Length: 389
Image (cartoon, rainbow, N blue to C red; front, side, top):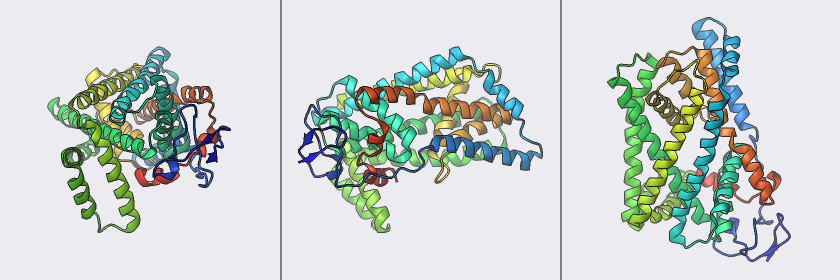
């Protein structure tokens, strides 16, 4: 037995995965004191990314245009935000966490897990807040907290998390496919940079989509055979990369099993569709809050949203920033907004969509008796490195 450093309760270690032992039903969270707490760097990563992207844009503007960045136009764009549309957008963003919790509950069904929906929502919101505040390590907070609340192994929830990421990836590729069809069919006058992105991105999206679908279908219908074949095909990788890929494939193979039941598959499709529809609606409200700068239709908003989603896949190594760059590229090259206005809109939209959950997550954490020092000490760094890369 060990004593949790989060609460003065005694827990019995169970299961094969030492980082994720399950407490009794009355318990909340568990730490393994034998494992050192991860040292989280990049605590202020969102702010750092925002400033870094802004700095790059300013430098590029001066070098390419030969003119300084118009800070007054940039600040005027931010000052003209319509708070009514902004409030509605934040409300819709909050609603997306309910649908994420419902979708996760569907993937929990094959495990016969018992968890109250309110607790699942709290864990979801706290997990997304941790991802904002703690960076990559924080991505594993959500599956860890849900594994404790549902009394299942942490590895099983990592599997669910991997499947969720794959489902979202497929939706992102579908949205980018819509962008590829929308722009040429409506004769939008795009710049050479966007034309290059569309040409190259089309092939990348098609290959990624085909690969994702093939992997899911193979693991769903021929789980053991496909898993062994995939692992044997990756033996050329160095040991560290092979172990990481192996952990990812094992997690995905376990997660895909929740789709074997037709009813579960239909529910996953429904909640995923509803989730992304609400996300598009929230971005529509965010862009409408800049009505003086961007009189965009709903279809145009979907185009911008598709660019941003695809940008989230193609991040700047070690930094991120793909979302902001993709949004600026779309607004300037497709809809011909000024660089300063597009930059202000992109950074504001990115910040609101990312950080609006933080106050709600802090409230949920306090209600559950957690603080961020304790969450920072959760024994999840190893899994975060293995699965998140």
